Image 1 (spheres, rainbow, N blue to C red):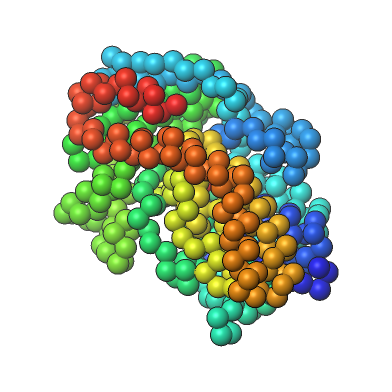
Image 2 (cartoon, rainbow, N blue to C red):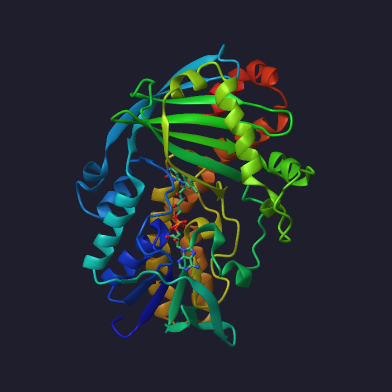
Amino acid sequence: MSSQKAVIIGAGPAGLGAALALARMGVSVTVIEKEAEIGVNRRGETIRFHQGMEDRLYKGFFEEQTIHRINQRTYYSHTGKKKADRQISTWNLIIEYPRFVQALASVAEKAGAQIVKSAPVDRYIKDGDRVSAVVANGKEFAADIFFATAGHHDPSLDIGKRALSRIDIPIRKYLVKNYAGRDTHLEYFFHVDERYPAIAAIFPRGKGEAEVLYMFLTDSAAKKAASTNIPGTRGASGREHDKLDFQYIASIIDDFENIHPVFGEKLTGAKRYYETNTLIPMGDIGSDILPAPNLVLAGDAVGQVEARGGSGIRSSFMMGQISAQAAVDTLLRENFSSQAQSAFKKKVLDSEQMHELKDLNLKFGIPRRLFFSTVTSPSAMDTFWFALEFFMR
Ligand SMILES: Cc1cc2nc3c(=O)[nH]c(=O)nc-3n(C[C@H](O)[C@H](O)[C@H](O)COP(=O)(O)OP(=O)(O)OC[C@H]3O[C@@H](n4cnc5c(N)ncnc54)[C@H](O)[C@@H]3O)c2cc1C
């Protein structure tokens, strides 16, 4: 494969997973990352151990990256009256996101991948139905095959004409310092507002720090928020979810800190350290994984995140690996023929990882979504608490 060239757009878990696999198979790999540093757009701080991922990195990788471990969760209802404790069978590992992704990058670089930073890809050049190059900072990067792994804003999505309907979770997350709650539990607090169903959670990280997460649930909730006439809303860009005004939503959920009897108290005196907000895809495949014969999509770009918490990073990395392996075995080996394209899709979609994703989505994601679309008030949340105890596992 030494004469074959691959360009990967985005040095997140999916792109680095693909880069590592390709480099090890002898493909010449260039990863193009828009940021000056890897992992600066912080995502989650929680990951569950995954043997397959560690096997592809090195023994002890997860151990090295772990700041803190958690194996219990406490869920509180909106009123604080209902509460459920749960044991987590696989430890939740609390990580420092930038450090974790930088460690992935360093394994990929050692295997031979080259990473170009400060290079936002803003254009794809096509030759017939194939992509011949991508452009970043006015410079063309040509290759035989391209991996679009730039997350849910991946510029290739215009080529794939993806429907955004499955990307349904506007999420806001921030890390606080001086967290005053217990540090051995993940603590969830549910709040349902008539217009904006939301969930908030505290993820203790140890050392007096905690990550606080707020997110809105269900497509219909997002649509409601998007269609409400809110003064100052950022206007339409054509896609309904883009109409959501995070600032306005944030002001509503900030109030939540004062409303919730347990939540506000635990955060008293805590300092914001970083925050981020975005829309994330949850569960299943939302777009074509091969929108052009030599353009592979993986990770959040296809909306394949597992429907359970702590799994987006590992499932994106694994998807990058699986797609790269399948691309070498089919597309690159058989010069992107139509048979090779079908074989590629079959290999990826039939992989154990994809089946696992689909099963989890069926078991948890879909019922969870259905459940939250029925809850319309805080008291309804308490009434349905028994169902939540089950679905939020
Ligand atoms: C707020 C938030 C919290 C989350 N919490 C968790 C959690 O606790 N645990 C968990 O496992 N998962 C979590 N997830 C999900 C997880 O982070 C994602 O599933 C995972 O990061 C997806 O990996 P990816 O490589 O597909 O995309 P990303 O991680 O989004 O990586 C995309 C990369 O591409 C780069 N890029 C983007 N556009 C361009 C461009 N035009 N040109 C070049 N480069 C570009 C970006 O800078 C980035 O480095 C969270 C996600 C979000 C948004």
